[in-house]
Length: 350
Image (cartoon, rainbow, N blue to C red; front, side, top):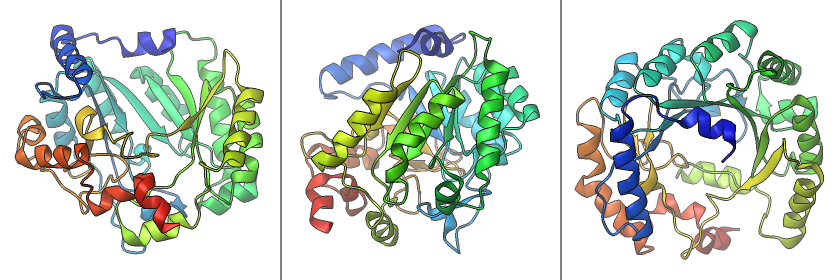
């Protein structure tokens, strides 16, 4: 953890509640989660399913996909019921800045000592919006950079403007350049066959912009839906192939430095031995307030543990339905919608 990240995540309020819960979480983790007597220290919260892009690998591009914004009252209930949270990530199917209440959400979370991170597409990062994010002490901003050239980027991120996203990223860096107490500034690159040849140039571009780090996602999710798993499995690269992995290792070695870290996201590259930990670590809260056990699924139409507008989060977290779901993962008795993340199943499909 970098000094900046440590400072950004230090809780300013409800410190004892957060520390006590965190210690219980760590003890449970050390003992292989034999007891579950804590609440999650982090959550992914979906501010909206609305988006101004139509990315080819995203289900938002489906013709019948409906856009919903999270109501501010739903968000406030979630936060006020979960004072133990250390941080939340405002991200989901949509572009977070589409929700006009996003800045009030960040401010409200701050009142409960909760650090906020955002993953965005970069299109709405004008100076006015950047200033609002900084005023509300955003802890981390991540921008999706899925190509180093206009053609590749815009072919993947349909309805985007490559030049605007890059220009806005430079603007954010310039507005925070001389600040120590500033958000972490990260890049996220979802790699697939159509942009695999640009991974070197993507790293070069992100380093030039001044991102603190770059993460490559090397496996596309299907959100537990057969139609999207079929679409995205055709686009996937084979990261387990030695030649492919060596190419990433070479890029990481070439461009990583003390001020610019590069890594590969491997949390959805699971096996029967390296099992999913999401149901013990965190939860995903949909725009309508439904609890989904992980962000890789991120869709209550696939699995829904309960709704926070009707039940307390605590009751949902400790429910028999959640307990049963965790038990199945522990015993590798996977639901169909979980199998795509596991090598033992995904390898048979390819």
